Length: 180
Image (tube, rainbow, N blue to C red):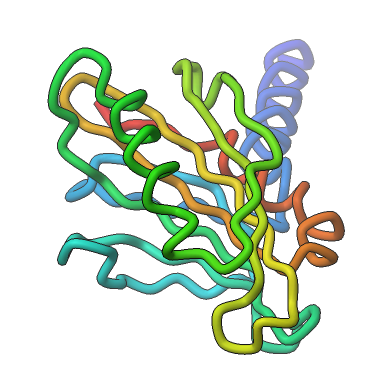
């Protein structure tokens, strides 16, 4: 009986440890867009329109967390991917258009990474805030392809805020999973 009670006690501790390992995040699940992600507990979530009339989900830091007048955020959108090399074609078009969209566009970094167990690509770039033209904005875009779908996660912050909060954003991105 003691052994059985001990096993139950240890099991309960393990379950609680797994379920509540990080109380600073919560899970957002979107069956319609077919993904889930862990995001900071105090961040705000809302449906938004993205370029081309598409839909996206925005996650934004609370209003009181402004750095250089800018609120850190990330947005997840879903794009129908056409063709085998769609990510490369998409990025090529992005790099051609970016200087006309983003004032003082500067590519900082690009590479490959694993997100949610799936190979992904990312780019990091800076530009001046379009409204003030004085605050430097830093972006990291992740591109994750699953079959005919491309998930784009765009992370945006002031350059100073990026370095202060990138771990929260990257933890969220790394938790991204496409639902089965």
